[in-house]
Length: 614
Image 1 (cartoon, helix red, strand yellow):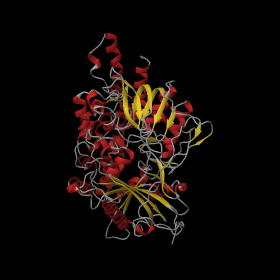
Image 2 (tube, rainbow, N blue to C red; image 1 turned 90 degrees about the vertical axis):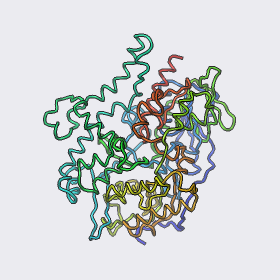
Image 3 (cartoon, one colour; image 1 turned 60 degrees about the vertical axis):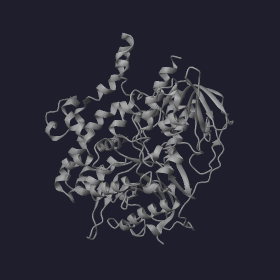
Image 4 (tube, one colour; image 1 turned 180 degrees about the vertical axis):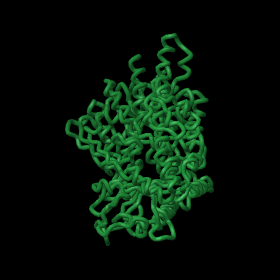
């Protein structure tokens, strides 16, 4: 068998072993992400203290970022994580022996460059493997060989690929990229600061009002686009330096509010290109390309950069857990105390209603002046504290957050690389350029994405799901035994609740996974025979394991009614909550989901302002 890696038994379902004791991470060498892995300490084992300045609930990447910034400012901080591994959804886990998976999140781009620099993550072990080319869309066609679309950073080569389907689209593509880049540049300043507190602008002393005006700076900076970002054809020739957003506002407003299918139809005519681009507008969203507002989700996924390359995505060497490990190292190096297997049971409140710490499931109480929650808004406000301590209108808002998820993540161990009909493997079985890409299957046209969405809205897993297939071991061979590979399948659409209230039991999970594998087999014959083991995570599994409400990877939909001023609820978008001393620092806060770290950094800065006043 070509490329066989010597793993003897094929297992249709692999499970993690548990049983790691809690650990303290200050001054220790971390070994995160493996089942039952213990953290190897270089110094004496520390104990959880009964009092800190700040406690962070949850060691997801945002919680770790918040802890690093708090501790960096001299605030004694502890992080308490309920699982046996740190990182939340950014973890590496050995699900099949010898195969290390980024079990939930699987690509990096959105991490704010300030965090990378300020926390010295490279010094703490973070290494990112950029991908170029980055997108591969094979087609199912009655022609030999079938065509495919390969997109990368070399614009001339990308245009050649697009020209297979449309010369017009090939010519328009650079202009489209520049146009979207202009909007991304305009929105970028809004990511690194709390949303404007409009109430504060009209209350308090004159000095307090002037201080509140400072919060408008990011919004004002968003109104100026540097000339070199590029704009649409009708404005580029005469664009002055520092062009105001207002001149492009009608075009950009349309992108933010319209269905992405409408925007793409204005630019392009070839369906494979439009469907490939549309995947970024629906990733993680219970939305169709025809859903109004889907354009913002696309922008959210092209806001990042790697090594100065805007919109680039890469793999973290060692899996996504290595990113969390680097952030934890940075926090621990400053003196933060970070513990696994310390599940928070409820918040401790004083008689004045102020947060005073947390109680753990084992009965331990940890007192603090600040509490930052990296948990979802639903867990934070509806489970960890009595709802009567919160305004009724706020509770209602949190209950009404749209958390519907279309995502089922399937992690697969294989004994050889997939060989696609549109780009067959070489005889030596070595990875080809397209193997490092996000491989888009069932993306011949936007109508297929809409059809898959429609099935899920009626409670049925898609019969021809949208599949984003990634093979990180193509660039990071240490993730799998020699000759073998790890395959990440990010699939849509699967409803959180099945029709008729049927459970997502083992039979339903495997039936859906079989559908996905049948689809892959059509593009890459032999894929099913290469499978050694698989790990199927439906929306209820993502909620149970990672605390993602409804399985939603963003802690709540990224629709315009749940962003900026309204995230997680109107009047509480600035990380502070109705409970004094309690802050939200996870993806349920501004600016939303993705492995970005902005919510953790911003929340820490807000909490520090308040701490200095105590």
